[in-house]
Length: 258
View (cartoon, rainbow, N blue to C red):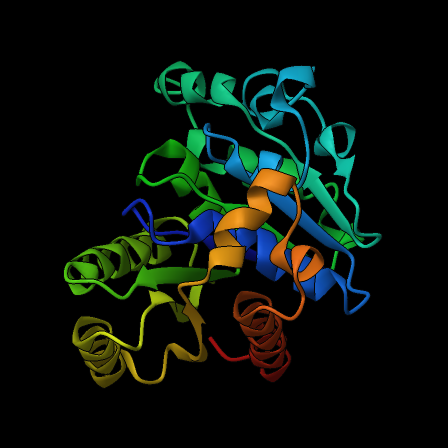
């Protein structure tokens, strides 16, 4: 049965989608069947893998609102072992449409049962909120990966998210674990980045991944070409960092830690 990772942080602009695309891509290059599910109505993970949202006839929205099988929504990518279930702005309506539905927190979990055994790793790219879509991701995941930008308000957002995860664990998913905190957009030339990194490591040392994702021009350019950075420029610092992170994530899973 595949390991399911929710990549979540209610704060926007911390590198969730960048992490989702590049982590999933690097793991798939280890010949691990991998699925990325785009749960963000912005659909940036979808376009970041070269898929034209305007041409989509079916998305993850159809699973939430019409009960469409996830298997029917899977799209191949340029990487042999990586598949994606896409998203677009239509998904924004799901938050409203599902408000009165009983058991709405378990929709994704129930849908995922039918294809979970087909993948070694499944990544859920969550929107920058703690609404019903993120709640669905946390309810069905084994692990949470938390990208945290090395900036001033990082600790405040991180503390809030950890409280939400604990509540989900108590009420909806007792098996949910925090796999780790990923330090992103780090600029080691600045005192602020170094201070934030030190503070987070001091308070959450056992959770923080050793690999730090730097600010990197290639990471910003790759999505506009519809490619993960490992395919766009494998020698860049961004590509090397996500390659190391992928190996770290796989080691933690194999050790059963989180």
